[in-house]
Image 1 (cartoon, rainbow, N blue to C red):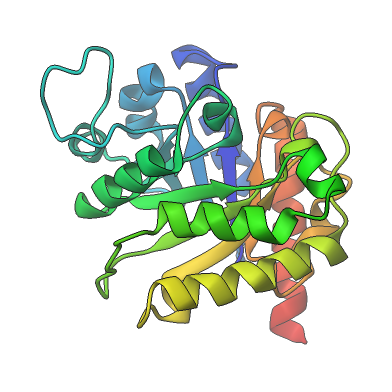
Image 2: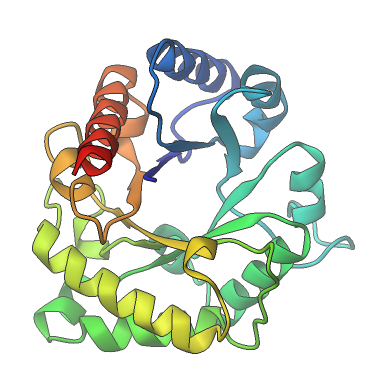
Length: 258
């Protein structure tokens, strides 16, 4: 199975989110082999989005979450609130939020809170250009995973998605090469197994994100080690995103026939 996650960021409002969701559903019509699809819309659009994607192959995702269930936290959104809206997935630790001061400790608390409400965390990890140039990619990924998964004890029903998104590739048009991504993904799998003893292979997946588009999507998805993609800018363009979904379908069919 391949997973395709659309991260619309702060690029669309409610009306545009609904239109995008309807367009994605139309693009899926009549297709027999489908990837797992998650649309992560802005908070303000989630309620209307729920009406569109209910009982479809598209799951509803949020772009962030707060770690407390309730309280005097003006402007924050809890995992419980997201679950009430029909949200099943939530992006946690995106590099854009890390850049605004989000720490590994905060990310850890968010992962725990999301799982407690039955949400699937989409945990983002990745190195900066300076860290990459210094040969520190492995250490950075390991430290981020250890921080995010500290003290976590998974249950048999818990699911986790880890998205490797090198900071130097996000929004730059300079996507990583599949061979390099495969190497990092192998490290992530090893670390997840080490940090979460007893977690089963079907309980987690490792995705790639960073300047993914219609031209390079298949190159990533044909790699068995890459379970899917976290798509940013290209997911807001329906034509582009439809081609990414088509690439996922081709990759799934290729693996089924291999």
